[in-house]
Image 1 (cartoon, rainbow, N blue to C red):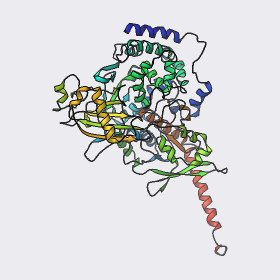
Image 2: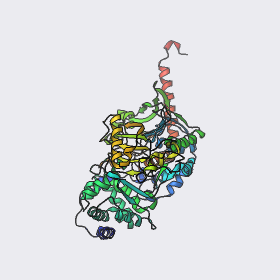
Image 3: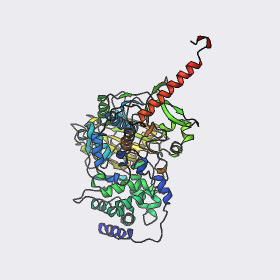
Image 4: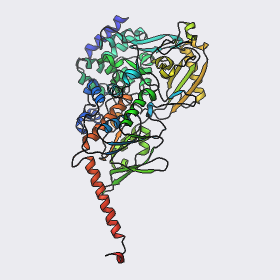
Length: 594
């Protein structure tokens, strides 16, 4: 079976480089151009390194994230950052290191954005999603090294992606192999138990004719092919040259749901192939890590300390209510002068404003005049989002322990090093409505293991279940876990939580990439950040980190000089004073004149 799959893959690989007389479902080069931001559209040389094909393999990006911007501006800007998610906090780190006065405003009572976590009244850590760190998160790892959390707050997992099927049958993409990528990836797909013989053959045939194979020999050529596939779904791409429905249903759909919370029939081929391109080229890309405990403790608290040590003020429960701006002679918005924040709509004035929000957040705060004047802002409203429900369920034993009933019920002793029963890794399933799940008491025991308690399963339901009541979602989670792990029917649920996020990631459907805005905008002192903004990665923690570094680089590159951001601010302030003076003279009664 393995030899047959490898033979199909090698045969298809050869055909991937053969001349072709047709291109099936291939978008036009004009659409490719609209979806790719040229490097010359960025001012900062450092920001340019975050885009383009080279950025995917550039491990030096980690060094850049570790060291910070490496420059201090001559001029000091006052900068308001709206949003204290990962993108906003990373941007604030670099801007503070470059010598600027930075103040942040966050609507929620805690930081983190879509990576937020908090404690309930009983001390349980609640999360807004399940967060996994791929080995190709070079920028995020650099930030964690910079704040001192990388070596202490991440737990590396076995190099295997595990699928749990009904009845407890396991399948896997096992990347463990003496030889690294691409051989480790080829053998993982060839040997996987997740697919039957026929599906495995067709899967190998389709992957062998994919841009991934070309990228092994010509990365630029392979990546350019991937960019051209943003206007079709993964299913369209996969089935047009031999891929089977069975492969999609049993293996690719769970992966698609885990990446973007939509299935292969609706997710962009570019999105799926981008991540698997990295898996094929870099051995470490498919290695998974998870936090030692909660995102707040392990990821955000070290960043907060870094910011506060540099004088950055973070205002929580203080959202932006309005962006205040000037207009030019034609009535177009020309400059942001400040923001109104908090319940009292206090006006705060800044030299520069960064909106580091998610898609629903930026849609709410952008003035209609910005959309009317500049297509870049209006394009954002073409981006859609997906709803998710994150479920946490605590049990009185170990749910994923299927081999030993005694161990499954044993909740005594120190489990902090993963010695509790069960699987210490991220899990996928084609037979459940949750896209991915994990036992946090095993994978992240620092804060999720409780003495005398068992598994804490965290599962992410997509829009198929979103409209159900919280109680129903919890029961559905338990029922589906029982189906996947039959022995878990002996266990009782002792606690549960459901967090619904009506608008989470932007929907990675075909044709969306061209609507993603750059960090610098047509309004010279107004900038954007967030994982939805243009960067060559997915809507993810790494994407958010990249965008934060890029927006900081763009501001730093534009801060100084006779036409820089500070000079613009001084000119605008001088003009405002002159206008005020003229207005005051006009109001003086003639009899009061000297």
